[in-house]
Image 1 (cartoon, helix red, strand yellow):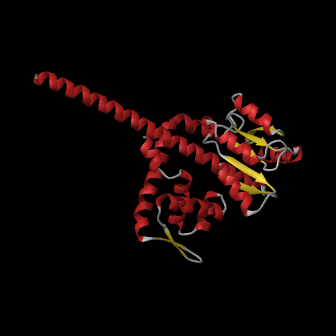
Image 2 (cartoon, helix red, strand yellow):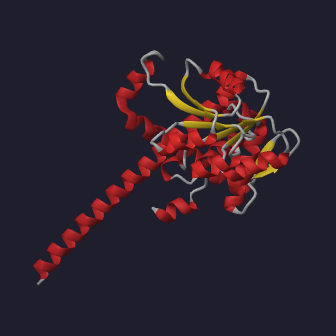
Length: 265
């Protein structure tokens, strides 16, 4: 299992690659995934870096798979489909019934916002209310104390410039907590330089959004990250179940070999 995890590319990169390869365009993939074209390109570059090879021949208006990566695309596409099917099977009929329940009856996903400007928090709360449960802190240290006391949000949104501890430092502190290592963190900030964005991703963020933002786009990008986390969790569960079955099979084989050896004696 550990060796498999070391060789497995990030799931977000595989999703971006599958969409770009299937649609033949980074821009079309971005529209389908509700993210920016730059985010798709960044994820594919990460995958190419992981593989040590270029996946596409890039042209002005199209994206063409290289010959060797066509087979890789078929493998990735089939595997993602299997993951979706396995996730559906794990959820079962109860999940389908839950999906039909109204938003008031379903448990809202929890989003933590950390921003030292109350006006920014009110603006975000207006955008998110009705869809998510919002937990907000204006003090980074108080937010960290809430997390250490057991807070487990599904997604975290951080400002960068804050008194006492900047967003980059807070992001690194959160990512160092094992149970929150896979929680998506988004920066929402007025800092718009390449260096600022680079530092945000280096700290562990999955997205970097510059103010002013369009509420529908922000909601779409939040939804993408939450859905990707759910898919990754389902993949981990499938892998764990298969590993458990393999261990049980090996134990049964060992027992059978022991019986055969005893009979031979």
